[in-house]
Image (cartoon, rainbow, N blue to C red; front, side, top):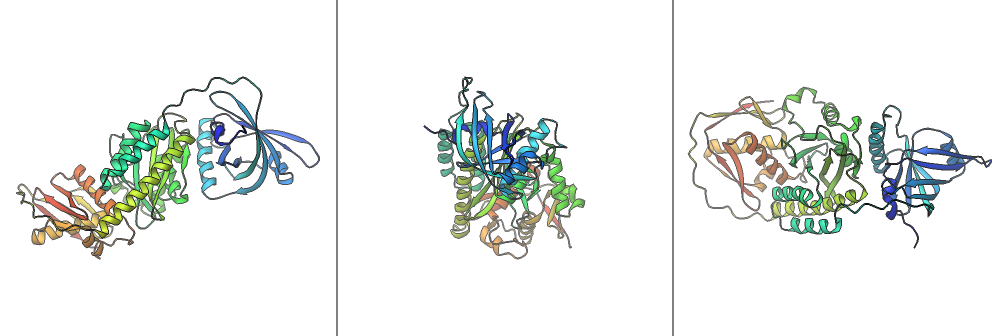
Amino acid sequence: MALTLEAIRACLEGGVPSTVATCAPDGTPNVSVVSQVHYVDRGHVALSFQFFNKTRRNVLANPRAAAIVIHPDTAAQYRLELEYLRTETAGPLFENMKAKLAGIASHTGMSGVFRLQGSDIYRVLEIVAVPGTPLPAPPPRRNMLSALRLCAERMTRCADLGLLLDDTLASLDELLDVKHAMALMLDGSGQRLYTVASRGYPLSGVGSEIAVGCGVIGVAAAERTPIRIMHMSAEYRYLRAIRESVEKAGLSKTLETAIPFPGLADSRSQLAVPIAGGGRLLGVLYVESPEDMRFGYDDEDALVAIAAQLGMAIHVLQQTAENQEEAPPPAAAKIAADGTPAVLRHYAADDSVFIGDDYLIKGVAGAIVRKLVRDYLASGRTEFSNRELRLDSTIRLPDISDNLEARLVLLERRLAERCPFLRIEKTGRGRFRLVVARPVKLVETPA
C-alpha cells in the first residue's frame, strides 16, 4: 500500500529538523536543513523560506527537490520527492507557518534569526520509507473519534448559549484532556474578540478583549484558519498581544478598563480555531497547555470539527432567540431592595459602566446595563426581550448580525462576578428578567 501524507503527519511537526536536497542547473547537488516541512493537504507540503540561499536559488531554476522527514517518536525516516509550485507571502498558510516557526525559533534560541519570508508550496510526487528499524510507536493518548462523537452529542442537548459554551469547554476537559480553554465571540464591528467563557483559570476573564490580528487568537480570526504553536514564543505572548490590541484600536488611555485576560502565564503550546456559522465568522475557540508539543495535527483536526459544530449550534440558537420569542412570563415577585443605594456610573463616550469606582463593562453590554437600570428606575420594569434591545437605537448595536445573545451571556457573567445585587436571568426564548436586590442610583456622564 502506498504511503500517504496523512499517515506520516507526525513527521511534519518540526520536532526534528528535516534535510532538503536540490540540484543546480549545472547538476551540482546541495543539501541543507529546513525548519519546517508543513502539511498542507493530502497532496502538498510547504517548506519554510527564511533565507535566499542555495536551496532557494536551485528550486527557482530547477523545481525538483527531495526531503527527508523523521518521526519524532519512532525515528522512522521517509523521503519525499517534491516539485516546487509557488511561494506564498501572506494568507492563512503563511500565518500558520509563521506562528509555528516562532515557537520553534524561541525553543531553539533562534528568535532573532528565524524569520519566515515565505511558504514554498510543493507537490508531493512520491513518499518512500527509508530502510531502518524504527522504535515502537507509543499508544495513542485517546480515541479522538469517540471523543468527538460524545462532544457532538452533548452539544445537541444545549438549548442556551451560555450552557452550550460551558458544556463545550467541559467536553474538551473531560473527553480530550484539555484543561485550559476559552471561547471568544467576534464584536459586531469585526475588529475585536471578547471572552465569553473560560475553563481552567483562576479568573474567568469574561469580558476581556483582543483585537483581530493580534496574537494566536487574533490571527486565527483574521485569517479564518487554525493557528498552532508547539513551544512558547515571545512573539505571541499575551501581554504583547493585548498591548498591540490596545494600540491598534487607539485606546492606549483605556487600560484601566481592560479586564485581565485569563491565559496561562507559562503557555508552551497554543491552538486557536475560528468558529463560523451561517457563512460568517462568529468567534474563536482557544486551548493551551504548559507542556511543549501538547497539540498535534490530530488535536487540530478534532478542535476544527468541534468548532464547526459549535458554530452551527450558535447560529441556530441565535436565529431561534431572535425569531421565535416566547410570550412574556408572569410577573416575578418583587424583591425588597434594602440597604444603601449602589451608584452605577455610565460614561456615554464608550458606554463604560462603573459600580462606584469599580469597572464593570463597556460597549454594547454597558449600553444594555444603562437601559435596563434606567427603565427599572423609571417604572419598576424588570421584564425585557432580546427583540426590543435589538430595536433600541440607544444601545447602538453595530450590525444586525451582532450576536446579542452572546452579549447577554457576557453581561450576566460579569454581573455575577462583580455585582451580586444586580443580575439578569433567562425567562424564556428571547426573554430575560432584571433582578435588583439593592437600591440603585444611575449617574450618567454625557460624551
